[in-house]
Image (cartoon, rainbow, N blue to C red):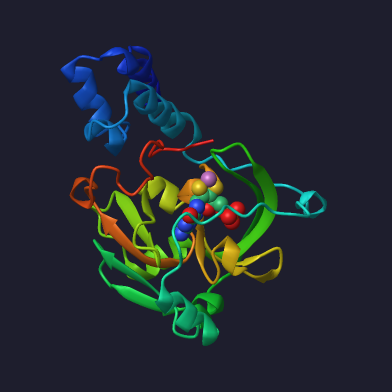
Length: 246
Ligand SMILES: Nc1nc2c(c(=O)[nH]1)N[C@H]1C(S)=C(S)[C@@H](COP(=O)(O)O)O[C@H]1N2
Ligand SMILES: [Mo]
């Protein structure tokens, strides 16, 4: 199976494969949804296919505590935080909820206290921005896979769309990424509550992909089998690749 998939890849998925090869690749889950939506070209399709074949289970590199950056970079927010954020901040984020809906057996809504009562996951990884800066930090939270298990993803589920309190900032990943053990709903950074500039009280950490996939101020997750109804960009900022594997 693995060999034939690889052969398929080598047979030129990236250079205008025939309809048969395209359909076979699609069945094998090797075509990124951005390709189907016609936004990005064959290059991204090839990157996605090779990464999914070779590194589905691989982990983002983890670092030693001594390597944690003294001054983590803060990405300037292009979009202002809405007023409801300030109101919740004044209440110590007691009203913050993250919801899970879509193709799940049991839709969920969790407070921060509930998230903190779940098994804790942590990793020291590098956040790499597409603009050329990066830093190493420890992220702590609950594995997204744990939350998705509580909700019970239906067998048709293929992608997770996630939203922030900034309506314009949302994104999506495939289920392999969502269930990967390093993908976290993070509420702490370097041992402290997640600072607001870094997405506090809650952000997604997707350390196997570029920083823009790690959406801050996480408020909701929707499991879906089709990203097309969500719009052409599938959440990713215009001009950036939907699949941003490092
Ligand atoms: N809600 C929200 N999430 C966001 C962004 C944003 O502007 N708003 N910027 C993204 C980008 S481009 C990067 S590189 C990282 C940066 O995370 P940091 O500011 O904690 O270093 O956050 C990502 N998540
Ligand atoms: Mo970024």
